[in-house]
Length: 64
Length: 220
Image (tube, rainbow over all chains, first blue to last red; front, side):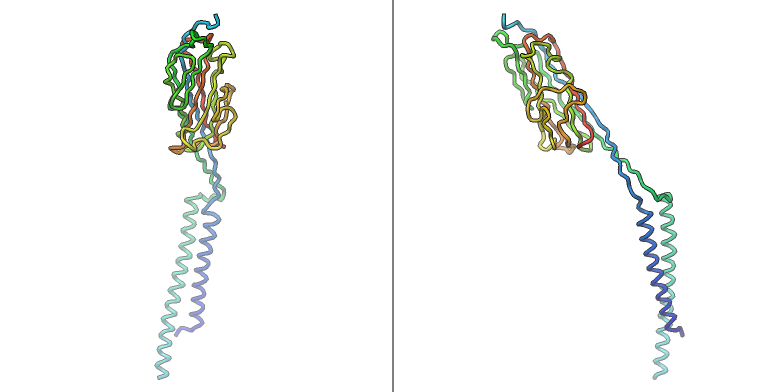
């Protein structure tokens, strides 16, 4: 027959192991798995050219 | 009767003990697995680095001129006593006063086809004197920049030609009209209207062209 004390000890050990497992997971994920991200925006400028054009036909001097 | 009860209790205790051992085994397995997996993952993802990840995002500004302003040939109506002619684009139409040019020109259309808002700078290549070379009082070269699509130019700054006529700017870098020139379709186009007052005594005749430089840069 297994003593009640042994059963209690086993259950407590199981609980402790589970808690430690969760703690290790959270600790590792928080501190190592998600590194700090430095965002750098690299803007590439652009330019285009438009044109305004006309043909000017010489005209006489209106003041003559 | 009591002996039977003790036997039953003992049997239940044994079952609980076995279950407890199983629970401990599972917890132990879970613990070891977690450590091994995190170790592997850590190595693959971060290469054991505990520093920073530098992430560079390339934002693309693409300024596009989808239409130029092209007047045909014409002259000042000097026979009617005019000393200059005024040629004005009004977005999708145009007007000619005191001259015989055909009013078929339209405003220049500027688009932001990139993937980010941009600031908008405009520089003309010539001023009125450089364009025509005539009597100063009879010539001018102005521009007027307006939204073609509502909301295209946010935080527009009237420093010389936003929603009003102003002499063109020929200084390097030009005039900043928008700090947030949108890129979203339907909100990414502006008009660049021009008004040419051509003097009767223009020294620059035949085909005359001015090249306007439109620059998109970091918004803000």
